[in-house]
Length: 539
Image (cartoon, rainbow, N blue to C red; front, side):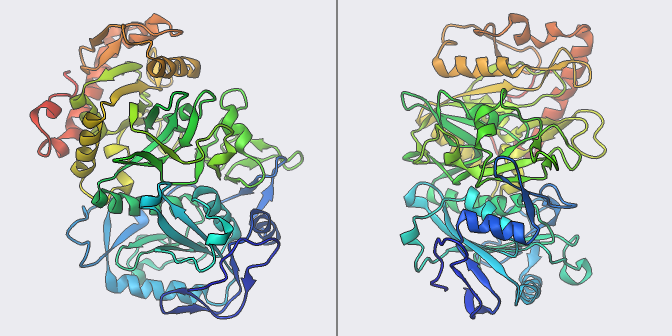
């Protein structure tokens, strides 16, 4: 392995002598190893990969692919893992022979090109730390990795030995007929080679989510529950988890000025407590404002990356309301760009767990306290709704069920993750809540989004214990114990049926969603007990 991987000013750390990057493979082009933030920004600008905003963030554009390409992700069929992985449309198999041939083509493509590397870690708890190396042909991808993963001290980079490598050939196009892919893009995971290969896409999120998939395979083997959630810690040291799919508010709600942010997206729960899997945040920025999300807004500065955000050509100010490229605009920044972050990346066992759902049908109660059985039911369901207009062809709200709030990243059977949740939730007496951040008074297009200040008030009430003496009444259709009152929240907002102008229309829409829950849960029914099966909607 190369020994010149060190943090360096200017263009130090660059070289063109043959350098071993992977076992048995040598790169003869120029290598920029572990450049400083400033040097990576300079390289990106010189190479025309992006532009600077008025606050110094690097704005990059990913072209045609402005989000992940889940249908283009494959896991290599290998003897050591073949029997453990749940194969199917999420974990598509690729024969090892095809993988090796495509890897050969990737290496030939990269040969002689300038490459940028980042050496760092996943997992803030040293007991579970995963050393990794990202090798990319674009400087801004190395800067993205520097934002998202944990950054070792300079003295620890000498002789750095990665356990996993991420190879990013963003400009290479696969040939589906020859390579066995579905399109020109490909994301390949080899557990035997401890190698991730990404090609045909410039979307940087593939890098972080591929490592998350790896950790979802490795950590359960060590008794650690890997979670797609944000986490923060309060003044008295109490930890809270926020589960939720994209757009439900987990990044927004966990960035709380009164609490220290542990992380915004990926965590592990071990016998010692919670720890961040990353060293940075990857926040959605569509309609971001200084007033609504001040911590995220101020974190976007020099050293951060904006992805597919429209930049005013004269003022260089980001136009966060402009979705001409995508609704999925993003900002990547180190977690310590949040002023009150928890710098250790660790917290104790959670006291409260919040499931966030954006119910665009407008029928779920905004605030519910779940039983342990309901907690497992809704964890396995992972419900939210696609909002009209966020994807091509989506003109009405659509129910989305992402198992464990993380289906695209789960290589193991869902019951494995649910079992870990059940064990840790019961052992440490964590209370689970369902918070609906979606619509009230009707579905999207007829009702209105639950005001953010009301959602923040609900979260605040959960965390400060002011709901301890509030009655919770089971919803007649969903069975969810809904709060009768909450400080700083209008009482009528907590009873969704009363906010609709036509209660019969509410009933019809609620029963429809209840039926979708029941249909979806059939896939999990055989693997859970009667209590969990019966914890779903009643309508």
